[in-house]
Image 1 (spheres, rainbow, N blue to C red):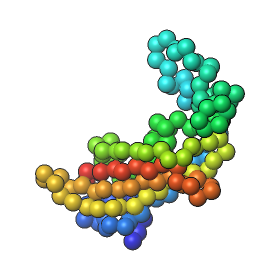
Image 2 (tube, rainbow, N blue to C red):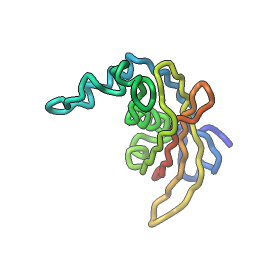
Image 3 (cartoon, one colour):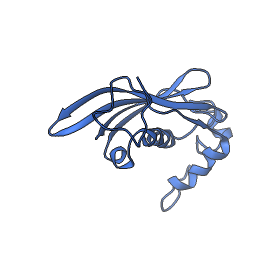
Length: 151
């Protein structure tokens, strides 16, 4: 098994079990706060200022007992990991299904990686199935994604 690189990844060169390059992200409250304005379109909802991602007091009372990274940001980190292994064109044409398993909290250091699960030809297309995982500093898997990459 080898580590995939975007400059060399072809359908023929990949093997089941090949690993994605590792990508490490450290989350902070500041980085969590910076994504808030990107989610607001038009008039802000009545809950602005009472957001489980950015309002620490409000978030302490919620399901995660504190602020957490937004799932869409975790997806972005996973896509960034895929771009280390595959061309941007292939990544943008992929199917991507993510499942969040544990909160991604301020102070967490998460390493994203994964592996090739299968290769197949279907309908004239060469497809590679990949699992992407994010694992925090405590060894907990915080999210997984199943991805089918066309090559």
